Image (cartoon, rainbow over all chains, first blue to last red; front, side):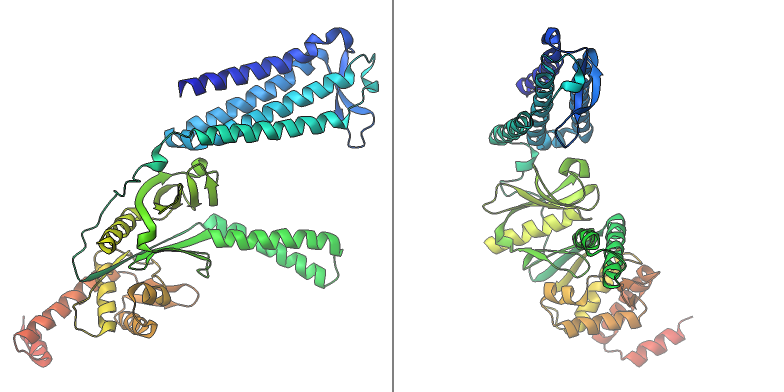
Length: 328
Length: 115
């Protein structure tokens, strides 16, 4: 971990120095003010900065971004740091290369000009830096996920975990449900907008183009958010069944022998990247509120499925007990 | 919430379902205002016909332990915790009386005569 911290520090400071040094190194061939902003038509620049600002501002943006990412990861706690590492290692190089590439393009555009109004940005440079950034991000992601340490995400893999006292001849089932009223509200609001757009479209009050552009994303968002706003879980002799939304559909099922282990973990939205159905370094998480989550590891999978429901301890215990009983 | 059914129980299934939910309410598994799993969910999880489950739920509604609300499903009634505890004890008393050979009327007379 120590090496990683050094790598982070060197990458952060090194990139900042590079960004700041680039215009400074070429200062003899640059005008007093540098063109730093161009419109989409690719012609004359519409914004400029003095040389010192062109050095410092992009470097400061970069440093602030790094500090923000690191602060967020520290605030989220130890487990989250390990889980979000691949993201940080993928995102920071991407952003670094983008800012560095843009800085290089700006310097090149201003090179040997006497006045910033003459500077022309070549689209090739911008595209090239974007491609390089994507490659850097993909590389960072691959490197960090390959050497992922065996953190808490893999704990309990050996089939241990909570158990429940279950007398022979007794059938026990466990139910739990969670709803997030804010997501319900969001689904209602987007649904309302979608309906309004549809009514305007049918009534001929709006142009078909914008109305469709409003209706389609809002309707989709409303359905997706409504599906994630409430979740029901049940554990019975059939295994674990998780159903989403007010209609209880779609459903995900695991039979007891398809579950390798079940346990409880505390997770927060910052750890898994927000609310709803989340894919992250911790696996899949259905996150409706911070706190207790039922976490299962399916047989033959390397990642977990987690669900933020109350009373997860007994759900996990029952699932483990049923699995052990069926295995006998 | 956790529901327990005894497979060796010989009572009718709808009574067993009602008994399991009554016990869950008495033990605080579900609190007043909580929404119960739907009858369909209960029937699938317990491997019991959905009409049997509904019959059990209706019995609990008549006892005042559950409320059926349109659009909100089945919820646990206010003060259901104490009520269900008392209901369980009454049933235990009746079972014990029957075992000792007292009829329901004997039991009623016995209660009336108790000061």
